[in-house]
Structure formats: structure tokens, C-alpha cells
Image 1 (tube, rainbow, N blue to C red):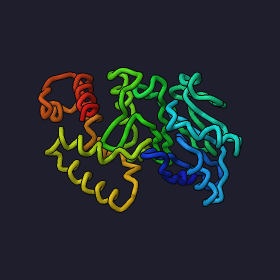
Image 2: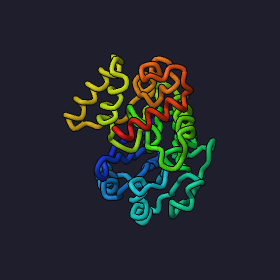
Image 3: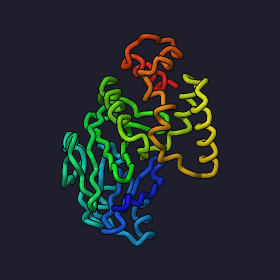
Image 4: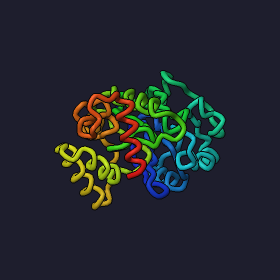
Length: 256
């Protein structure tokens, strides 16, 4: 089976919506449609129909287009069971360890709470595609709104255990602001410095910085490195436990 054909659609002010299509069956899923019109335009331009919608969490900038897309395509809406009371019209609810079938492509559901209490991420191994909503960003992670710092750190550890070739399709274009913060606490990281230069070039040319690749995040994303003694020492927290380090990184970013 060929990997998904995936297109990146800018939406709202800084959101990304993703359309993933199985080229053999024409099965097509849209991930986190914060608004419908850009999705409708992209589908029309490609001559595609829509069969599925996947929501990672309940926030309006990720589900705002659901109703209009369902009305037009009668698409099957899939989302986290624990957010069933906050995402209307779901046809299929999923929990950790479930497999989502999109045209024969199997997506592993990973519960990744922290940003919201019921947030999920979905890993399509055959396509090297991780749809992680607002849990993991390029050089960053989501704010901890409903969960705890421990839950968010546990979620990130779960995601970083995936294949290093995983491509990270996250919910927002936050990369440059994340980069500025990462440099502020990890200024001697040469790999981070090089990535930031690349990202600055991409954005100056109007290109999305997404997807990023997990192997690069493991070396440069401070939120994935809260258990790295080098980073802890740099932050003046040598010997501290990872949750404490992660909490301090998140606190500093929230106030950056």
C-alpha cells in the first residue's frame, strides 16, 4: 500500500488542517478542520470527495468546520471518546490503543492528555505520519490547559517513542516563536541554531515549517528533553526530576 498523499492547508490565523488521501481507494480524511471553506476549496481543486473527519480534541479552532463538511459529504466523524460531550456529531469514538481504518491505512490512537483532558494523537506508521493536534509542535508543545504537567510530559514521552522518521503534523504554525524561546534556554545547541535558520528561510518564502521530523525534534525541542541532564544543567536545575524541569520549561514559555 502506498503512503497517504497529504496536503497542508493553512486556516484561520495560524492553524493547519490536513487532508490525507489513499490514492488507490480515494478514501480521504481531513484532520482538525478549524474552518470548512479552505477544506472545501482544496477538495474542489483536487477533484476529491471527503469520507472521514478526524478530530484530536474539542477546541473550536480544530472542530469549527465539522458541521459544514458533514452536511456536504456525510463524512464519518472520528474523535476521542473522552471528549464525546464536547464534540458534536461523532460517529466513532476511540480510546488509547484503538486502530482507525482509513481506506486500509491503520492509525494507532494514542491518548495524549495535557492540552485538553481527552486529547488524542494518531500514528499512521505506514505513512510515517503523526497527527498530534496541539500536543507536540515543531520546537514546542501545547499549553497545559486541562491536564497536569505530569500528564503532558507523559504524553510527550509517548510520542517521542515513535519512529524517528515520523513526520509531525501539528495544529499550528508556531515554529518561529517556539524557536526564539528554545534558543533562549538552549543557546549553545548548534543543531537548534541550524534548524532555526532553515525555518526562518522557509517562512520568509511563505512555506510551512510543518511537517517536522521527530529525529530533529529529539535533538532540538526542549520540551522533549526535560530528562536530558545537559539541558537541566543549562537551566540551573541539575539533578531535578524531569517533571520539574518540564514544568519550569512550560512556565517560562507561558511567560516568554
